[in-house]
Image (cartoon, rainbow, N blue to C red):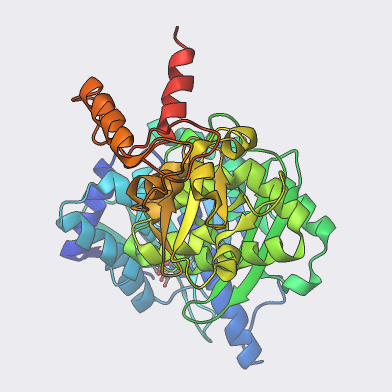
Length: 517
Ligand code: ADP
Ligand code: MG
């Protein structure tokens, strides 16, 4: 004769359950992810134990996770033949919050962070079932010898009951009795799309009403050397529901400082007109132990995700390498995606990081023909010993740059000038400020600051006449200009106007206004 025991949840668990049950969290569906991931953990554990100890009985069944939906009784079941739980384990694992995710969640919650924002991030594990269930039953039997089965049941308020349950197979079956408003989770198609979204790469077969719906081997876990381009193309289509191909593929593994498997695809297609305006989200998904934690991780990552910087450095190194080995493909990439890199320079907070990204940008140069581009590192490498600064000229086109009075003014110094044609280039370079210890300076500013003396020629204006002319112009433009001076550097242009910074903004302003006559 079995006895039914009533237990109270630990106080902290009660509080957590209260938050979860009251939560208006919009992605309630993550409870399925949590249950599947628990089953996957339980299977992983049993697989490990049975490899260590041949006497452990796995009942000859292949490891798998089965999900069953029943619309009529509004039930969703998740079944695994994993390690199962003994009575003490049931009490400890499902009655307290020892697990790190829930603990972290409660800590953040107590600090006043809105629960809606963090449920998905930390996951509240098993307890998330109570977001959608009036009642949850757990049938479980441990893999340990002479174990007995138990039924655990709770409505998620303050208490749960445990009683012995005969004839259970080894493993765990969880039955969610869905709330009326959440009965969609007993619909096969709905559940299928949720499992595909979060659990496509769980390392065990996942069956839904008897049909397997997942891909067991995620490509990023494979040895990069063993994955063919064809595999990548197919996988890329699968995850991106994309119609193009990856143009570059970065696939690597590392074990320190974190255990990381990384697979990044650079799309072949150009970014859409509005892609750049999408606020701070990248199309990178984070999986932990094959379960999707978050897709489109934002740029501003929480502290616990700071390892993503590791990825940033790898991406930069990867692209530097591409530029060297496949210059043509890289140039095309820059033409399509260069604006993102420049945005990276603008938005990053640290100089080191800015310079890291700046290694990737390229500009045309006065030392090379139209169409050829150079990067900053090579530019610095070519600098003469008497040149201390990196010079650029912002201009809407090559022709305008070459015929510019600013260029003429520095021509005899024989320094290399970078030509920048995009209206945002100047802001980017001003933000960058330095590269490899060299200041970055606009030619216009250089001309403005130049103190060189004028050599008065016999057939031109003399010193006194020049001063008279300068005074006349100063008088004429009083209040409209800062200074007027003579320069020895112009030959074909009579004069040049300079501003301190953002000279090229003139062109920008002009094009902007010409659109609104
Ligand atoms: P976490 O998975 O982070 O440990 P959960 O709240 O999801 O936290 O689960 C709590 C614990 O309950 C697990 O650590 C595990 O010991 C136990 N558990 C949950 N589901 C199962 C299962 N299907 N089989 C065996 N044990 C389970
Ligand atoms: Mg879990």
